[in-house]
Image (cartoon, rainbow over all chains, first blue to last red; front, side, top):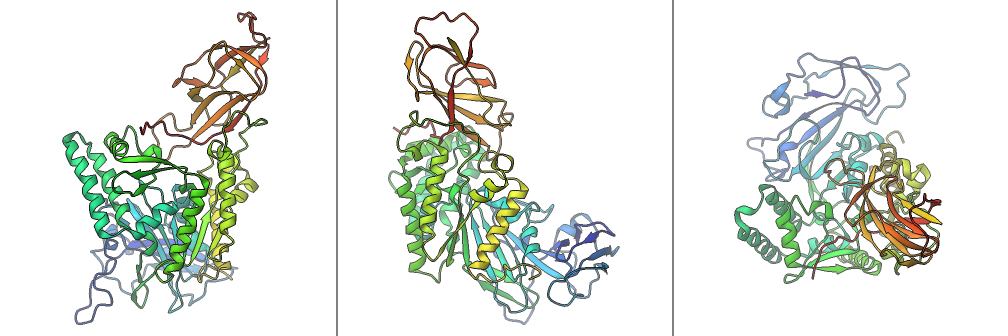
Amino acid sequence: MRWLREDGDHFRAGEAFAYCNIGLIPIRGEPRQIAQPFLEENDDLQVVFASRIAGRIHRSEVSSRGGFLDQLDLFQFWAPDFVLGHLERAENAGPALPGPEDELELLMMTGRRQAQISESRHGLLTGWHNRYRAWRTRDEAPLGSVLGLGICEMAGVMRGESSAFLEMFEAISGPAHAILSEQEPTLPCARILIEQTMRTKAQYDEIAADLIGYFAGVGSRVEPSEWIFVASLLQTLRRAPLAETYDILSRTSLHHTGPADAVLLSAHAESLLLLRHRRLGYAVRIHSHRLGRPVPNAEAWLKENFERVDCTLDDIARDYRDLIGMIRAAPERFPRNLMILNRMSSTGEEDLQNYMGFDAPMSSALASIYAQDLNLILHDLAREPEVAIVDVDAIAADMGGQRNMPDGVHSSGALQSEVLGEILHVLRARGVPGFGSAFG
Amino acid sequence: MLLNLIVPRINDYMTDAIVEWIYPAEGQHLDIGAKLLDLTVDLSAAAPHDCPPISHYRIVLRERVWLRRLAVSRGETAPVAATLASFTTEPDEPTDAVSSRPIRTATAAILHQPAWDWS
């Protein structure tokens, strides 16, 4: 057991105060609900505890033994009557969360490691994962779910300051499931998501052979860290995050679910530069800061094997419509709701009275015009029943863009909280269960 | 009249800017709206940074002038308020006087075009 609060601390109803890593062992003689539960995720399966009432915590002296005895799931069996401590109800405690007050809220979470070796057990959802998720169940009630597929700006919104989804789950009633999928080094734009989903194993095998063969040819001149880049790229080329499904553990059951009810994309993943493999035809979009000095051989591989495709906003609009078409063609395989974070379209840093110094089309030159035109494309797309916009542009302008998003991408904690609130509002409006307010 | 262009404080957090591109040549007559320079502002310039906050800007002219002297070259990093270039309102004015005022310009954030040669 690892405590998030000190002995005697006050806590809110629903506020996390402790957690532990857990492991699963099969019950002898019982049939398995799932043959290999949490495959790729079992190393970092954790449970977070919260009270349904506000009060003060008094920790049991035997609840935590420190060191690896608390970090590893090997040294204690889960016993329902194990005493963590006791909770002193606050005077004027305010509303309680639904359910018996003497039963703790359990928020489960886990991550799929980028590689089994990328171990880091020092905290909640710590470590290098390519997928993070948290869920809270309530008896047999339907589990609403949202999948985040964005760049860094989305990670801060969904995982919050805690980096463990605690803020999101403290704000909602549940039962709900939140998933954040990382796609580094590629950008999860619509075109990449489509190709990931449609790619066959044979196509992937050919891509992998080509990529691995190139670096094998470079030999010992490849920096060890570049192999991590190559492995990460292969991971994203092999996966299809939109169609992924998930194991869910609750107090009473272990079951499989998916796909998510809603997917949250980011307009920041779209750019006018696309790279397409000259021979194999697949596309990648990679942040330029991931290339260059740290991975010179990877950059050389891209230059030798890919052609630059200068896209237009019409191309991006078509990619989004193709994505909607793919979802409609197989609705049982994909999230039925498509939500998109738009871009802040002004910074307050510009001082522009004359556009003569910028070549047409303006959207290819000026960042603000590009963002405004892209946001307009999203408004057109939002006429489709599946699509909703999360208006980061309006929220940031209202709160002050310079103060809360000085570079147009990275936002303050306050802005992240407001964007999260808007995401929850959109999920509720679209009827995704579980994301209602915690206290009704 | 002698006019100068300095590195503007585009962003409150910036300390310098990288000169990415210089459009005119010394001695050239420039009209209103002419492109002058493209700058990159990297707020993480002190040390390499994951997901660096990098922005790109273009400075364009708001008055007719002659470019008399460039004080920077492409790729150079210049601190805020450092002189970038000197201009005169007549082609043959002396340039050794103190500048009368800053030149009138407009600044806009532009999309980054990676300088990769894909040919």
